[in-house]
Amino acid sequence: MPDSNPSSTPLPAVFQVRIAPDGWVFAATPAQSVLQAGLAAGVELESSCRNGTCRTCLCRLVQGEVAYAIDWPGVSADEKAEGWFLPCVAQARSDLVVEQPMAWSTAP
Ligand code: FES
Image (cartoon, rainbow, N blue to C red; front, side, top):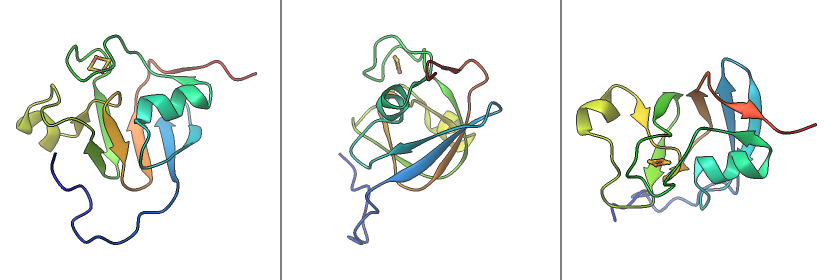
């Protein structure tokens, strides 16, 4: 697995994730996938396999940095360069803005 924190600077305990365009905000620890963090907060993103292979969760990372929990997530280098990412296996490494118009909230 690539070193997601090469500077060895301690990561903050939690990052803020904002879902655009609806504006839901939730916290994500560096150890959680963005998908898991959303589910824990009542914000659901489309998903299926949850292991980085089916691409159901593919969406755009508008702002911020992520690291992948697996070596070969199902997203190409070109797609990564264009901002596409897989939240089911991506872990926040900064505050994030994620574009996912199909997200929904189960929070009351
Ligand atoms: S849910 Fe299958 S790749 Fe994310």
